[in-house]
Length: 92
Image 1 (cartoon, helix red, strand yellow):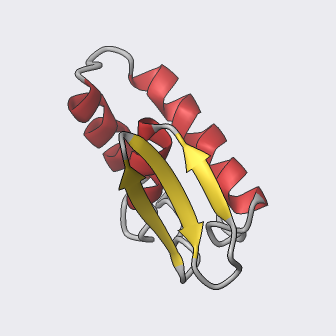
Image 2: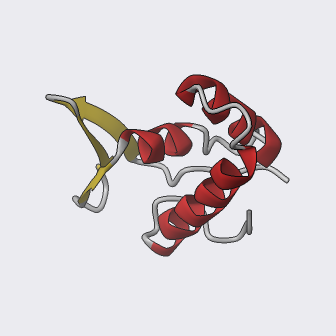
């Protein structure tokens, strides 16, 4: 199963060490942690859940913690969907 597409017009910005998701069409700004920003960047519709977990585990140096990362990805994507930042139709 693949992660959903990010909603068009939503971009990731980093400023002074902080990460933000900017909805350029709706005008909303969401401050997120770096992991959430990386998860959002993977929401392109062609990244599998397993691929996202592997990518994040490697990036975070968290080998052996894949199950916790999987749960975090699923929870974070669900929150993105609830906020309208990712398409709502795909459960992860």
